[in-house]
Length: 312
Image (cartoon, rainbow, N blue to C red; front, top):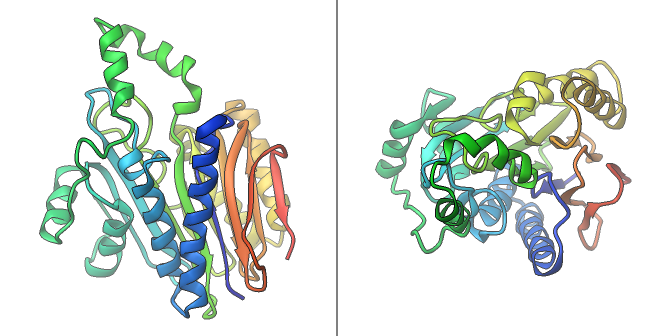
């Protein structure tokens, strides 16, 4: 059974022109992954293609669309995990093009699982990775607008976070299943808007931002500090391994997060070994696309239900 599910981040409901751009971004991204699976390529290829498209689109908080940090640059995190036990991640890397691809290189070409900061940037340079130009970075205006209005940024940092909850930390992610029953999870993010330099979120942390087991893949999005402290992906996968359905496992973990950390901070997608898929979020929206073998067109869901079980 071939299947793929992707998301564009949990947060506010996009409106107007942005809603159209997000819809088109989700649709084109999942079609890239579907094309890989239908052409006999692996779930690794499908996840890389889908996530790389979202990184390059400038629409989502990843790649060239990453939110600027407190000092005005971008630092990105990304990771990829497979159900046969492979994992690679990069964290707090200054501007590079397609960090998800660098995470794959860490997984496939090194003895390590996580490389961070300037050393990850050096590895990327040695492997021929380029940067996004300043003109390509689509969200630097957020920093420039804030800088023009605020003489002393530090005292108002908490207020910025409070007012701009929809900019807290959306990631992009994908999970795919191929004919070899390989489940692959991938994630990429620019992290929190106005984060402190060097901050690392949940995305490159196995068992928090993502996981891939023989039974399921999980990819999270939202406020990374909450996702790390809750070990979200590990808990979801653990309940599934104990025999609970994707739906019950996901709702149990989300209920725990709501109880401990409140609302408006988290969302995640899950893909099972038979192609069953689930999405859940405690935010207003989480744009999601899903497809499985035999479906003519991908299903795209924005908001409405806080959880959505896709029926095969």
